[in-house]
Length: 315
Ligand SMILES: NC(=O)c1ccc[n+]([C@@H]2O[C@H](COP(=O)([O-])OP(=O)(O)OC[C@H]3O[C@@H](n4cnc5c(N)ncnc54)[C@H](OP(=O)(O)O)[C@@H]3O)[C@@H](O)[C@H]2O)c1
Image (cartoon, rainbow, N blue to C red; front, side, top):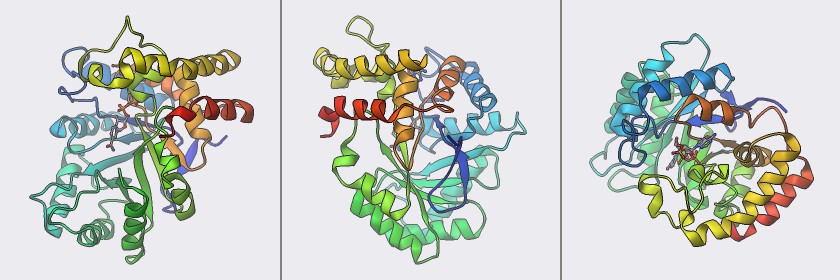
């Protein structure tokens, strides 16, 4: 199995697994600075690069810029070729083309880079900035050489189609749609988004691919995470009971391949045509383990068994 992938029809090549950096610098949701800190996430960065995972996903809103700043600093410590993706927040006070270009420049400055592999629109909000104007500005970002490809995030099927068409009028392919996708969040299959993305040649970046740690099997009613995840019903007693058959199936394949449950959950996503998972990692151990999700493959029967056992999560 190849360990690199193309982003859509863009020619931009990235590793077949990415790494998400929302938790790097984010205090509010993840508790950065309390339960883990800069040394841990720098070690996660180094471990990923050493393992050949070179595709990093950040956003200007993560830690209000701190994730981009940290990633920029870490990137200076290696000569390995890296692919960096960040995201634009379509906020109400950004309603001109110039404001989009300023946001790209500000991200590049925090990242200490002249150009990045991928720039994504974080949410399909329009407010006063119309989608056509937004995509015209992004096309200009490509023409200026600041961004090598353009993606969207959290766009539904129709919104993705419109984004694809807007960019096509500038001769630019839509590279990715970054959406929540895992064995326990499969709504995109039901909603037609997965099928349409394949048709359009748009790569899906699967965010929260470990269901924020649940699919590693480490969380139980007696061992719940600290912080905001305690409010997520998937982490309560009913949610954990529903999850049990999926964890059992993950365990079976994990034992057969001498892998962990999380590695199997990520490998299942990689087996879906056109999908690149971007698991978050807070330390070297997690980054190393997640990197072990590539370089091997579940059998077709195992892929099918996981598909069947996770059907309650299609809706
Ligand atoms: N576009 C969007 O709207 C959007 C939304 C959400 C996320 N994202 C992107 O997707 C990335 C990943 O999503 P996510 O962070 O929400 O969820 P995730 O990747 O499913 O889960 C990440 C969390 O799981 C735990 N974990 C990771 N690897 C582990 C391992 N090997 N063993 C045990 N625990 C492990 C860690 O938390 P603990 O150690 O605390 O359990 C880690 O912070 C983000 O960083 C971000 O780049 C994008």
